[in-house]
Image (tube, rainbow, N blue to C red):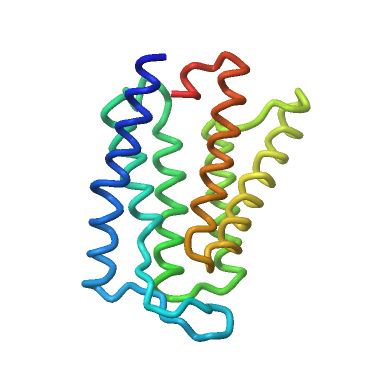
Length: 178
């Protein structure tokens, strides 16, 4: 439990104090920003992108510091999160068509499930894998839809992560909760 608290505090501090401010400054310097159009984007000032980059970097800095990626079989997760991070970054820079976005999401989900990141709800391998692919793609699209409102995706992410954290504690999966 003490290690979990240290991991949480370290992740939080790295994200808030280092990666978010650096990503914000970098986005403003490189003009990787969202400009309001008063139709879909109703905010009143230019908003820097790269929040996803800050979260991605923070996640992997902490995983590198606290876990042996090979021993804990996290290479598939590293590659899968890198794929979707790159697709999101490209979408921020040049808007991808819905078909291209969906293709990237589907390939990433298939890769993650193929790497062993799958649910076991039904107890049938193929059913669980198909459900997991559907669920991963659905979550990516849900975040993509709410990402036009500043802070909403982050709040939803916090709620989802908190729920999953509670669930992993309930299951006794200390590795997943850490």
